[in-house]
Image (cartoon, rainbow, N blue to C red; front, side):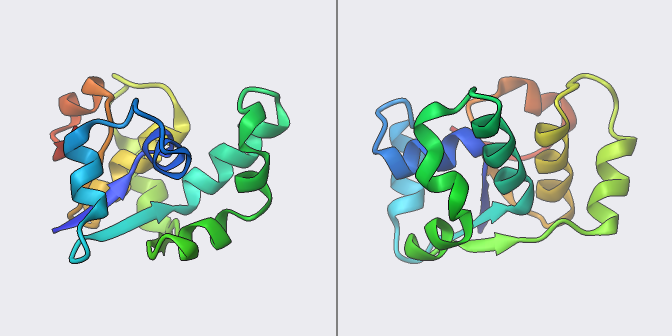
Length: 128
């Protein structure tokens, strides 16, 4: 099973933050797990760090690709199909970063590792 990390889950994993659920931690830590990090998360981290909303994420913001690689995760590019699906999703959730992650998880057949219960309204598989 492939898993796509929500941006907060990726940052909490990197920080060793106890906000990451034990179930999510256990899945990510397994050697056989295929863990993906979206280009949308790189965009979100860089944007929110620049705006001062993620002040502690400076090191990650300047080298998201390096952080992904160092963890043995795989980057997930954003495609035209992802963008189209994201834009067509119903309006339950307005955050463009989250909408992209939902669309990617659906199209790439991934479980989405996130604490966002609102994602369930989109029928996406979610692990938390």
